[in-house]
Image (cartoon, rainbow, N blue to C red; front, side, top):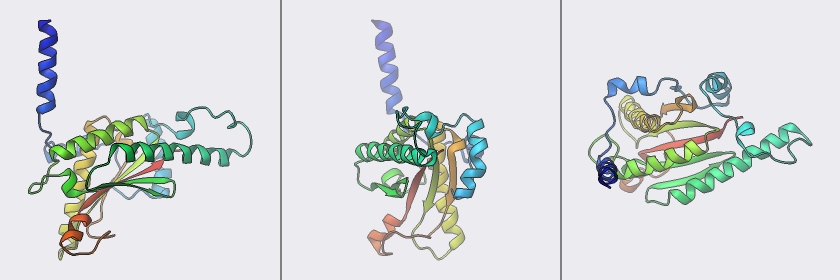
Length: 224
């Protein structure tokens, strides 16, 4: 009984420890295997051998066996398997992430999770907040379950006069999220990390819009 109480106390204390991003000097080690680039079709094809060599899974080998998969056109069957897999992933993320400042969207076969900065990071410090810790932990659990996907983590800012500063800030956000996921057992060989500065705004550049434009987007693409 005393041993059980000790274990329970340890678990409670561990759950109360606030997450902090590790020292920046260690980020390269945490992100070894990740690609610091956009997740284009060409980049995914080039990364596929590295991804498989690092234990990456493909949808065709990860999905449940479809009784009709051995019949008809293989490409059509693979496309259908990918569509079904990504649809399940979309619904799982949507159900788990009903929180302010977070949305789940479909982009063709891909699924995109949009995380407004203030929903996952401290208001006045460049670090993951307690709410962000909870949110990213949920995402990490789902990504471990749906592990036959490539992951693009892209940071964005609102409009800034200094374009270089905007890119640095957006990359910092993206890398912090990527480091968090890497620390929570997400295979870095799946990752593409980029900072796009103030490109691709999703809202007007007014007070509310600027808060929405400061964001991290996690784009998930089927690995096949």
